[in-house]
Length: 76
Image (cartoon, rainbow, N blue to C red; front, top):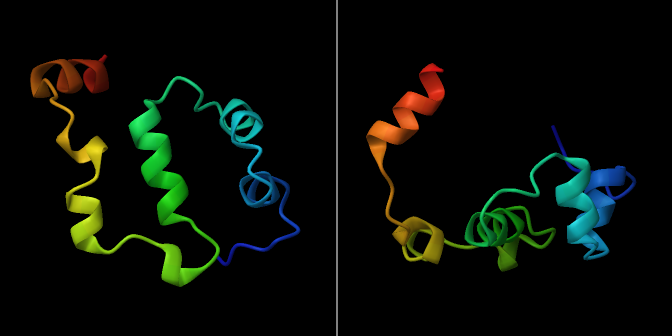
C-alpha cells in the first residue's frame, strides 16, 4: 500500500504532529528510540530514509533486551 499525503495518520507524520500520531495509533508507550527509528524509516523523501547500516547503528538496535521476558509476554 502506498502512503498518501491525504491519509490522516500519514498527514500527522508529515505535519510533525507526532504526539497525536502515537496517541491515535495506540503506540504512545513505545520507547522514544523505537518511535524515532520508525519515523525515519517512513520518511516521505526516500533520500532521507536510513540505510541498512544506519538502522544497524540506530540507538534502538543497541537497547538491551530480555528474550525470556519478551517470550513470556507473547505467550500470555
